[in-house]
Length: 286
Image 1: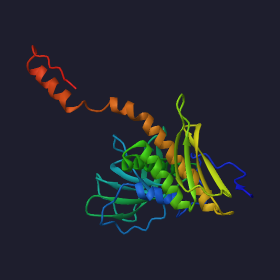
Image 2: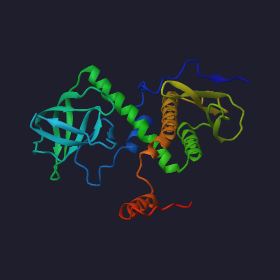
Image 3: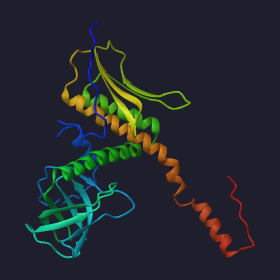
Image 4: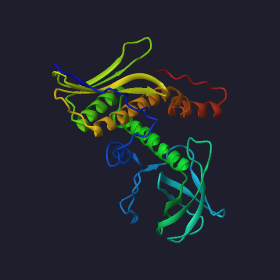
């Protein structure tokens, strides 16, 4: 039986995957970016924008005497709101803003593409050095994957369900006959998720799943047909594998995040009662 396999490794998810405009990387980013409402400004955009998520607001300094909140950010521009002072369409602005997760702020200029009556504006970057353009593309790619991972974990409602959903999505997007996700767990049995029928395998492609810089598993697609997968499938696979890797990181961070969450309502009520009546000690019975 002839078996077709990939002869060279797929790229690490931290490297932007070439040849994907309009395909999976863009679809994932569009699907999880912050919604902009039903009445959108008349802006024809060529670059994906990623919503700014997190506990801290991101602001952009404009012309040294103005500032605004950043709603979303992409390699080609940004959307801002709550402008301190109005700006005019077509105006060229000096911009300085932090890139979340990056130690160095971005300093560039931009042209106002549109404004509305809600103190919002779309700004198109006017000049980007090659290094700055690379930083922005890298940020968009990494945060699009991270947002997609959060969305999967939220929608699925459970770890195994999220893996099963990812396997099914990979099969739909690549047309594979079967998909398998395998993750190594130190000291435990590997985690496995698969969809599809047991067919004679004549074509198979696998992408490594990374947790940070460490390979912890793989995402494999297979088909009973030779030549079943094209360049678009080979570009989509590492993006999907990167989403799984981010899901693993988010799952590992859950206990740490839970420790910083507000205490349960019952504990807060007990605290208030004990504060009012210092002689009373309340014990919560599970």
